[in-house]
Length: 269
Image (spheres, rainbow, N blue to C red):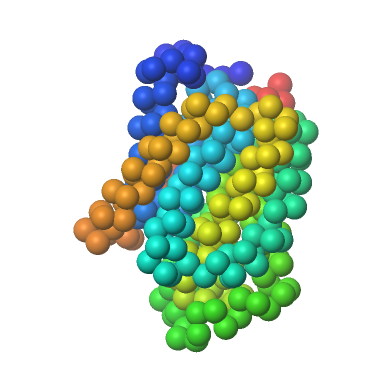
């Protein structure tokens, strides 16, 4: 398996844990600025450190869960979290998160790498879609469409599958679909998706834990760093150009997608 020689090290060593916490801070800042989960960055970096993709996706979910819990508690304390809406989406995501984790444990490494590369490119599309929807954001009631069963089911089922299979929160996909299919405002959609991710990530983690794929200590370090970074990101947001940061992040996603595709081709050999 490919890994940079200087980065191939015991993941539980103090230096490795410090590097992972630093990575968590960085991904947390990105999440705070762009509303993107850190899994898209965490999984490729863990892969560079010599971790198998299925372990990387499972471990990423620990960080995703801790960050989502932190943000959701803050939203709940402010009275801005619609628990019923988040629960409605999570209800459909719980079983597919189990399916995604089950599939991830059985997919060959190259197929998982190729799929992750495709997910990164799709993320760029959904980021641009979210931006366009935000520009023409409707003034309809924020929760008017949340209980329409079919779109809620579709969003939840997809979010659960993505979370369990790839170790991501899937927020960028969920937010765009909630705005598009349910007519929610972006702020309401972000809060709802974050709350749903808590339950969905727990579901995926249970299956990955059963399969012994989770590296708990590295995952907790990533999550702690993510909590700190998210707080920094939300404070930096008013001072940063969203367009510039978005372009830089999309460029990074393209590079990481190329790396994951390259990793997939190497795994075929």
